[in-house]
Length: 207
Image 1 (cartoon, one colour):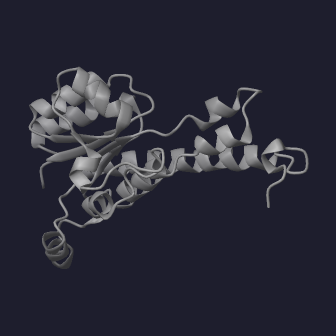
Image 2 (cartoon, rainbow, N blue to C red):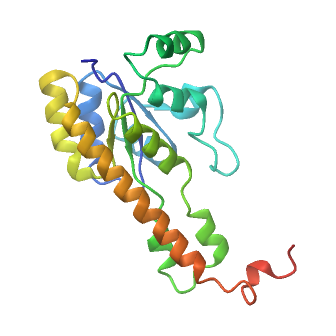
């Protein structure tokens, strides 16, 4: 069993993050993060590396592109027991990312505001988050993925005991990911389906 050596944390719901991040760092796990999550971890005095430093590529397009990079997704999706995958990781300097803690832009909370515009709704459709979550869940054999802060204690307990989580835990957490992303996409689809394109000002004068 490989040990968890590197974690990427990018959260909208930051409850409990300081304690979780501190314990991971104390266990020797390198922390990667983005934006407000990185700021919160850093302000707590916990060492953290910006994803842009890890990838060598800056956040851009008003934050729309942060984690959509081969060094992130190659780090997540490589199979640790696949010899060819590991050769490619060496060739392209892809370092493993063993743990992902991500939750998504609060789309449903945003559109619950009756004054929410279509433009605001669109900006609160998360792209990088679901992509990382689905990649991690697909590769649950090697990657621990967390979408719920309630899972922090069990994950930390297992890492302390054996350096990694159990395969059964990783599978359970992966199943939670697909439940979440399915619900998230359904909420987006349902809201967009109600938009009246004939009267909505977003479309005025645009082709």
